[in-house]
Length: 131
Image (cartoon, rainbow, N blue to C red):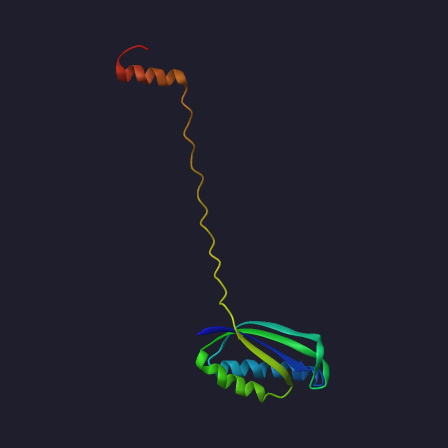
């Protein structure tokens, strides 16, 4: 399975309730072709840089999803037939990276400082001579 993103423009001429239906229809098409939705961005009303099908504004919707590469062509054909869609674009993306948190290390105990006198005593014991 590959990771994809689809961005599509929904006409502002349709009813606001119909916008949700168009979204559900697109999601249904993706799921029908073995797509698994990862993330959905709600529709945002945008001014277009130039008119598309004589419209200057549209709702922009974006979805990220997983789908087998062999199913993309079939999916595109169905999306083109969907009423209310001005334009769409499907692009292949790099899959999101999994964030792995490093394990927290326990603080290590610092060795205690040995006094010089005690160190000399130990050396005397070991060597058997006085320094």
